[in-house]
Image 1 (tube, rainbow, N blue to C red):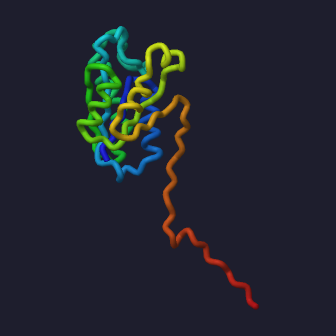
Image 2: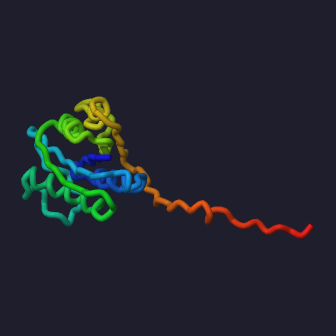
Image 3: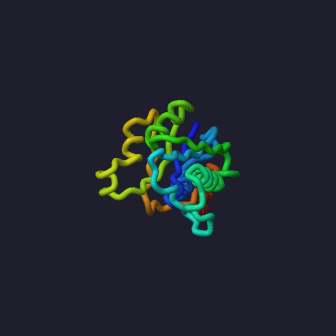
Amino acid sequence: MYVIITTDGSKQSLQAARYLKSITDPDTITSIAVLAVISPLAAVPFATADKGRQDPADMSFRESATAATKEVAAILTGWGPKVTTHVRSGSPASEIVKAAKAKDAGLIVLAARSSRAEAVLMGSVAHRVLNHAPCPVLVVPPGTKIKARSKAKPAAAAKKPVAKSPS
């Protein structure tokens, strides 16, 4: 399955990538594309999750988006599936849906970060992707807890011997 993970450079985007790792068997995923979309009408650069990083005001929108995709990719590298990074320009929801259609994606993962008021006033990328995506969409809300994956026990090890008492 081809998976697209979107990022806007926020901590929530990083959390969405970690959440995917916690709930998914990497053997079921053939490859992962980390996608950032630069809005041509953007007034501010991408969000920054790490204050130790270069000041976003000194970076171009494309450089900020590229840095954001690399940060998410670093979380997934070595986990299993091949990870690639991509930066597109356009309407975020539209570009995410186009990428999913072009690659016949099996899943889109994105973080929900807007407040209800922002979603009502400006529209929600997550809402638009949910309504137009050609595949399932996993929306990871802020504060989602990540649980460690438990390893399944082999059937033989799961059964404990029962001691028989003499009759």
